[in-house]
Image (cartoon, rainbow, N blue to C red; front, side, top):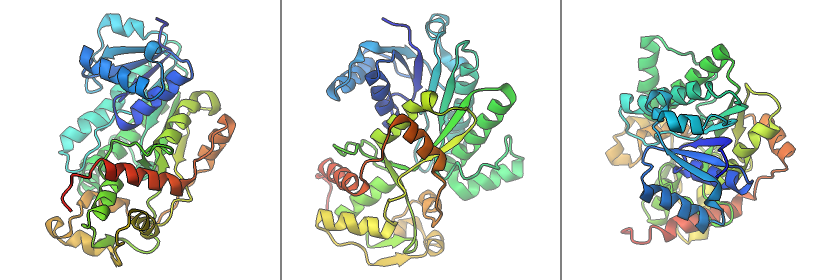
Length: 351
């Protein structure tokens, strides 16, 4: 087996497995660092790759954990990954309602462990770190934050998003201090594959679509111009894989999203028409929803920070995509296919 020249952290996650598939499809030998690297788990990952048209012959699976310094690698596995050129960190704990320390362990400490380990690779070309389109807008966030500012960040944004903001700042600070060749990718809401709709992730916007289909979405939070942009997982995977080769200089951050995503109200209407259900007519200001109990609104409070009219600068991402010959797939058909797949996988839900 060829020595891996790329490593993917979070390789069994939603983004990570499609990225792994893309890298292997390019003929690159890739290592996946898995917290559970048991034969059964490794075999299931290889099976998934094969079921999706890939060849797992170039895949090396090693046990490790981003929550541990040095990724918890044995000395033998660390040596096996000595020639790694590109490190892709798609590992994160993505769930609303997390505890602060639980979120920080994965999304702050874990991000730093990956970056510090990457810095020990003698042939390192690039570290590609996934943050997020709302996280990346906090470019002025410092690390470490004074205690009072940190408390406020976690109080206002919730543990998941606050930990991603803090992790983003921490990795940037380390890269600047240590000369680490870092590129940050800030994806928007990631939806299913542009052709098949396959997703496997059911929180956030996906949860809203399922509630729409099930008749449990009486109203929308936001305004007529609330913008929740999306990107298909296959485009994001191709973009991330292209960064080391087609992004000329490290140090940048790229907002990867489809600017043609309809406003949230129109997106929901589009999918309601497609699914043959009624779209909610009422829109409730976010501030009002925030003041009401979540048991009454059915809205997870941490999702409300994503309901914004903000737009995002995608120029640098477009330059990388153009250099790599990548084009965004048409967004409305992709949204419909994603909704179809979500519904097909949730047909046993009570309506």
